[in-house]
Amino acid sequence: MRLDARALEAAAAEAGLEAASLVVLNVDAGEAVEFDSMRRLYPARMIKVPLVAAALWEIAAGRFAGEDALTVDATNMTANDLDSPLLPGYGSSVDEIMLLAISRSDNVATNMLFDLVGRERATAIARDGLRLPATVFARKLSGSDPPIADPGWDGVTRNAHPAADAARLFAAIARDENPLAGRLREMLAAQAWNEKLSPGLLPGDRFLHKTGDTSEVTHDGGILLGARGERWVVVTYTGLASSDEHNAAFAPFMRRIRDLL
Figure 1: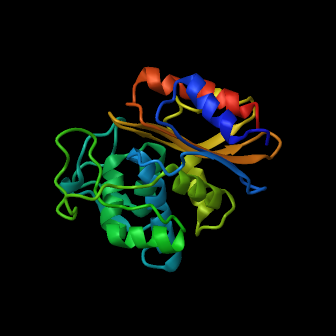
Figure 2: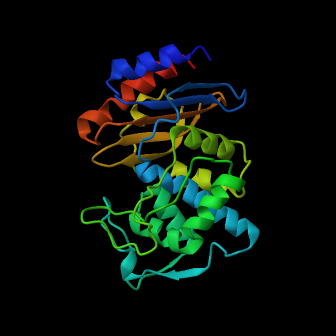
Figure 3: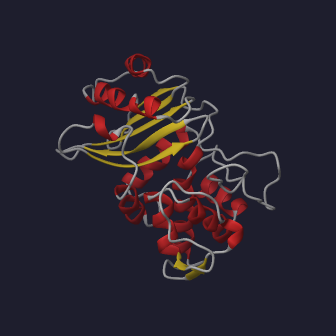
């Protein structure tokens, strides 16, 4: 890997990715290049990856099963950017809500996982099991204003999952270090949102990834699989508001660093 921290920072600046928090990691060699990887940026929907990883941890431990039935409760309803089957009274399963949370970034599915796993339990799994020391599950997600009512929230703490933790998690998923990691790779591969880093890939590349968007931040990150079997993790967080203009800046950044891997 010819990429270094200076080149990584320069690539972000050239692309216009402001207030960036970046990690590029060679999965097999273990080498990582970082730029401000612990910057305090709201993770937005990137928080869904460790939440599903925590649910898979509990499945592996036998606490519940993927085929277990769940019913959508009206208290978890909020807006989604894509059509969702998750309406009040809909009969779902743990497997379906995990897939929807990752592949379509479904907020209702995510809120159901908050109930299923429990925010305190998920935070403990992230810290002690998944080795993500700065990841916190604090508040259910809202797809629009006003935010949904969340009686379990303490009113202060925000969800946290910095770029450093995201990169560590993606690397563990790539290496099969976490329970049922292969199932999570399949969910990431089914990603519906591919307008950021993905257009900057080379022919033959695959990107198993997740995006995050709010009016304050825009992010993308995941596992990059090269045509010759190479494996990297690329995580790009920014303090830019999610917009077509800002999201389009991710592709030239990816093209630049891809040439240096």
